[in-house]
Image (tube, rainbow, N blue to C red; front, side, top):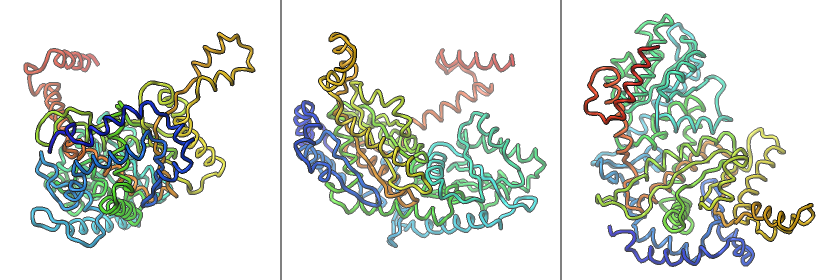
Length: 549
């Protein structure tokens, strides 16, 4: 594929950006009363208002042309068809097969993967119903009341965020907790609230040797045995989501309680797989299936909808516009719903681990910006802290605002205030407040003209800050599935435009390797001769402190 800077669409966008930077959205809204309706579209229970973006029809046309020239449709189709689009690891990328309700085959290396996908779902359903009904008993005959889910990265974050976001749909039988950090404080805090007779541990690690996950599972096992349980009791209280059945059974788990994962499911795309077992246990299998259904419907929308009305494509090209032509280095997510507060962290991993790359598909160094910094927090809390930087700094920071229109069992006054803050913030970011307006508002204050001018300058907000608003009729399981899939496909599309592999993570892998190497040095299993002076000194200081405890 040719360099992106050599495409005609790129040249067009560079020229357009020069003029757009001199224009203000406030003037566009004043001149076009239909702008909001013309720049609003919806699909899969999600309405996207992207009218408060620094784009015109001419800019959008050029952005869609860039997506065409970068063969985005081919990349989308190749993913759904099981093509080996993870080129550095020679793997298909088929998290979409995990939520495929079409009845069609999905082929990888000449084999239809759908029978194994459906068999795993059946196994998850049966196990979930067994635990929730109380049929699955612990070692002393008591039913399970608490589930401790141990994982890290995608094996932890996806299930945690989904169960948190769908709290109104949680069953009353099981208390589901998550542990990821290898800091002993975390696992110890969770275990202190557990009764070993009524606790089920779900360990999620494709290899069964992820350092943090394995250590936390070993700690849970030691705690379990210290409570008076026996080794044979482990089979009733520990299950695994892993490809390494032998390691799981050697640990003491029953082979029937090991749920498989395929190589073509990346960690940050894995909540749709058996990694979603904690979701099933928390909200029930039927609700989990609705999460899958919503994602499937977003998949179909992405595959079949023209770019001009395609939600993931629109979000993706807007992100490219700000990252490559308007100087943005970050993108903020602002959910105005308490249970969705963890969503920015989920998208942070999804996006930054996928497109935080500087090498093109053919091994060349990129000569353009790629994945932005993803951050955010829940509204309205952020309005009293970091929103200040978005409003008045000279940094361009595109924002995604998210709000469910209806919330189960929500007080109307509270929700009206939440909505008013959400909509008010998008208005303020777009509109701003001019110096003249601020100066006029200070006219009835007891200020000298010099003080009035100075204070007006401080109160001036430039506006022209871009934002998307995503509204949901209600954040039910189906809509949440669609929302997550929307951002997954946005990442895929941006990776295709930037010509990077969105499905490997060599930086993460290097960190794992070096972490294990340093651990060997700390534990005295290896010398520090191969380490740099700084790392060796830090290890020495740490070890000395341990000796002095």
